Amino acid sequence: MLERLGIIAIFLAAIVLIHPAGNFPLNDDGMYGRPTFEFVRTGHIHMTAVPTAVRAQLLWGALFVRLFGESFNVLRAATIVSAIIALLMINALLRLTAIPRGGRILATLAFAFHPIFLWSSCTFMTEVHFVCASAIAIYCYARGLREERVMFLVAACVAVAVSWWIRQTGVFTAFAALAVVLVRRDRQWKRDAVILTTPIAAFAMVAIFWRSTLMGSSAVFDSFLDVWRDPLFHIEDAVALVYRHTFLPLQETSLWLLPIVAATAIAVLRKFDWRIALVAVVMSFGFVMSIRDHLPMPYYGRSGCCENVAGDIFANFGLGPPTTYDVFTGQQVYPFALSYGTRVALTLFATLAAIVFVTALVRGARNDVVFLLAIAYCAAHIGGLFLTATYFDRYSLTTAWPLVIAGAMVAPWHRAAQVRALVVVAVLATFGILGVNEYFSWQRARWAAYGELRRAGVNVTDIEGGMEAEFMLERPYITDVEYRRLRKKLKWRPKHYMIAFNTREQWHVIARHPFSGWLGMHQGVMYTLQKD
Image 1 (tube, rainbow, N blue to C red):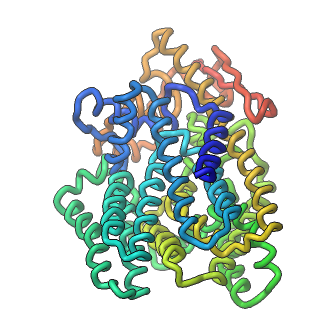
Image 2: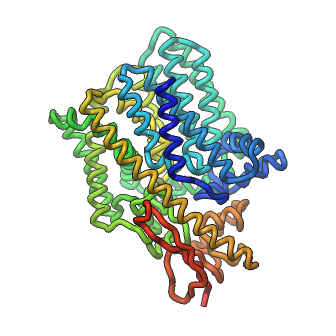
Image 3: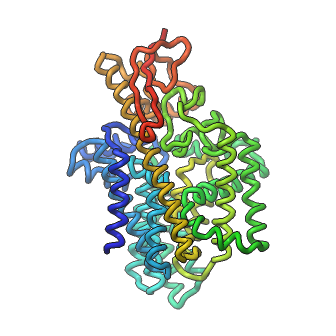
């Protein structure tokens, strides 16, 4: 109990330092938050233009809104609670293994300070809620299969159903568990297989007869599958897409689970064999492709690229997508951005980390149900990425989070390894806290500027306030027809006011809202511009 309380206390201390306060939507929060508020008021679910199911998350958020009032601060509190539950479940999974106590604590903290998890915990996005439901499912699967207890398997099936009412990809977790049962063929494997097939059959029934309940907008959902309908999309393009969508989550996960990589690095590099050589060759292709396509990490902001679109969490050596019009469209840059050379070096470093991490997993593979469930989950969910040509770095969190379990199981948790992991956890925690803190700093400046214009009587349709304002206030319930028209249009209607990180030609500054980041190392300004 003391171990878990300590982990929760450290995580909450980080949240306090971040200070994620402000009654405004972040990124896609408005598309999830607005129907939550309206459900509390009316008792009816009216989904916005989102491709995900999100209904379970909506009900979870509505519980908090009912208890504590209508505010995006309240919705963030709901996410923080989901994050704590997820950390407790990951720690519980680690307790099912032979990992020593120090390794368990460090592995759980490594995930707590996974920068994308930390950022997502301060929003009302789907990632943390999905990881929470998925972690509960994997834990129940592990207990049920290991102890041959049917009720745990039933609970796992329920958790899978909850997860697909957040993101449809939750059904892949059931396929992963079923694959483990079929591979292991334990004493009760036939009975277990029948039970684990139930959520798959239930999802199929819902998809056939109640498909509309699995998404907010069919047009947005179908847009993710457009690449497979393109007559110019050939077999070599499909192979490249599959490879890239395998490489990217492994690379991202290896970078953000660097404490686990640090714990395993010496043992991996001490012995050179064919496995590390093969992994190095396979992963190096991804690095070459990234540099060839001029997309080094952070993979943010090349307008028009079909696979890496402007919306990644890790951007400009900070955390949180800069969603104002000037930066989000790729026309101008965030004031504090990495140089291209630094981005190339970072991409190389992340690729080397991936080589070490994947090699450690390959060498340390074992017939343990927890390990197999972790690997099968990642294989199933990364495979699900192949259905779409769109990749955001936050997908690495939802598809590969169990690698913290598998990685911790193969790490040699002697004293030196624990010291290395602790140092890296401290570095990542510092980066995450400062990065998310800066994100909220400029967001408060942006929304203060937006509020000034509204109080001055400017209509929301005449303010280019950024992506959140566009979809929260102007077109929250955009129809499928409007969405298709918007995609063809490729640009917003011209407006007379803009809130931006940069000044622009043919616009003059009418207000400045300064913001500070990284403990004062970054001093920026959010400009309110008026069309000349």
